[in-house]
Image (tube, rainbow, N blue to C red; front, side, top):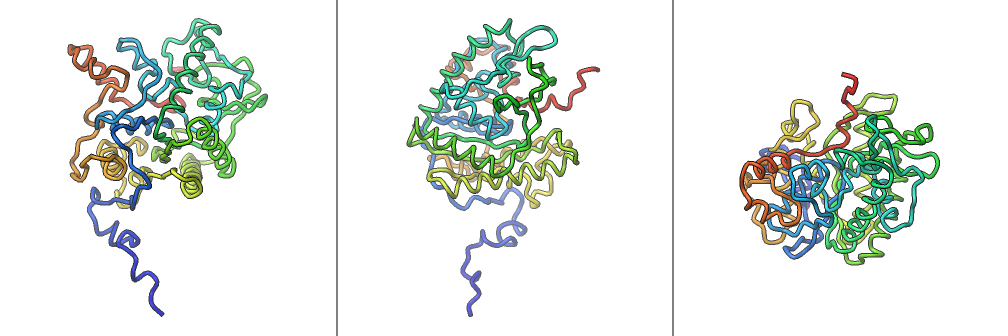
Length: 371
């Protein structure tokens, strides 16, 4: 009987496609089910790592969709404009993404809609860090949310491609109505119903059901949209489980990877891009991580985005391993960014410096607010 593996291509064998190659030569993407064209409007959402994708798309001249406009000020970077298409901040869990859609279309109205900071300022608990200065009160939060939801609906309805980076399985859920919050109560602000919010670590089944429902709802308003799923390679900054953070990280990333795999196999025009494998693979010998073993080094981002460009962006030449990426060349993601670059001066340079930073809500979990 013939060895059934004898006719398999090189990418099916570890030695041929991993251990015998240089680190920058490893390419785990076999094929892409579709391409992103220059005329496509692209939206992104998810964890911190998702921001690298938006910068690459913009730097390559692709139409990165921004539906929530910002004022002309440097402070707008801190207020969450342009980081994602609309000002929703980091979306760490699948349930959070699903509920964003439901809330934007008036299908879900959480009871707990405003949290309060120690200085008396109000925050939107579903995006608690997008407004650095906070809001004056409940009315201001709700007024801003109305405009925000308009931008979210526009994003879902106008996008040709939606890229979602799955980040966490752990979250905080209202015992009253199941609303999911991106940050635990007490970290940034306090809710009116603090005793009615519980920790939740979502299972694979729960996340698969949530993602399936989201895809169905999204295609109800945008039937032709294409979806790319990725898993963030960034480890948990902290876990609320009674176990080591390394074990919780392994569960979280493994579960998310299964969810992404099943979705890409079970739905048409849903693809999985292996940014997680590119960064965390044994072949890289941890060289793509910073000294904290969480944050991704620019070289790792370059590798990920070079392969994303090579396989998914039509009309780009990303075969050069030294190709520049937005990790080294930050860009303005807000509307009219071309005109703003032309303004020049110290303010523009400072704005570029600010955009180079990755904005990550999760980081505050390991800050000592008492010091």
